Length: 165
Image (cartoon, rainbow, N blue to C red; front, top):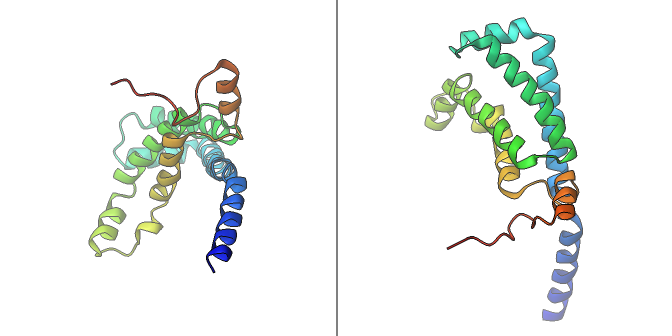
């Protein structure tokens, strides 16, 4: 019985090792495409985006709408190819935090207190924030331009840097 478990376990971990590089790639692709689409949508409906940002009380709504739309298009495209992943994931995370604290604030409070009509999973910026946070922490993975560039110039992969004491 132990031998069977050992064999099954070995096969399982071998499959995990093969699939592991796909996790950050698929995460980047899904999140990146979504941000490119939402950024283009903000540009295509720029006046409505500015009005919405103004209704939220955001300062300089036109400038913030342009910045956000541009960041979503460029940052989303960068995530797709895995270039500047940690930086763009951090910047896009910030836009999700702002969205949660403004547009989704009432829904978030209702979900946390059980008094609203929405669950936490209904709060789309929160759902985007989770994989973005993961990309900030762990990077683009081996199937990315980040990995190729870091390897070419000799920068260690994420998690292998020595911390100075």
